[in-house]
Image (cartoon, rainbow, N blue to C red; front, side, top):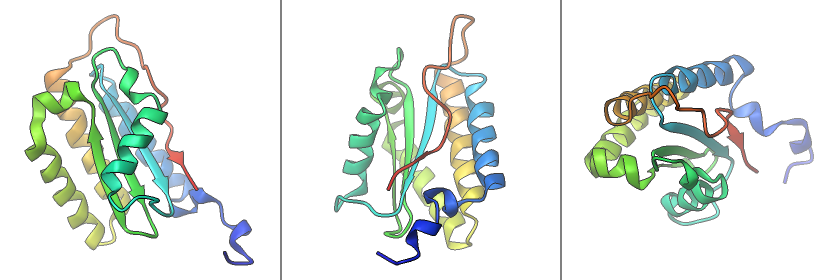
Amino acid sequence: MSVFSFLFSKKAWFSEEDQQRILEAIRHAEKRTSGEIRIFIESRCSYLDPVHRAMELFHELEMDQTSNRNGVLLYLAMKDRQMAIYGDVGIHEKVGSSFWNREIKAILAAFKQHQFVDGIIQMITDTGAALITHFPYERDDKNELSDEIVFGK
């Protein structure tokens, strides 16, 4: 651990403006669906497979408690350069593994161009479109989970 590490917030991975853009993308995507999208960012992945870490976080964040089981978590471990997208059973049954694999390829292509925020926003947009198709907004829908980006250690 660096002597100066206390000077840098975990949120330093993204500027306030970038965080606001991501948050607005989540809110826009969720506006027309009962689905929930969350982003979890940390420095290092404590698991060999980031999917296992995403699954753990998915349950810790109680994303498995949505009424339609249609929550989606984008997990990023920035220093380890690892990520995973984890969708609950309701949305996964509708879109299948091929959808998630395409999203991973698209976000990785953006990341290779150092377009981190744009890649995240595109994933949110694409996932939101899938959620709107399979879980359109109903009059009694409510935002079941916070839209805020979660920053881990």
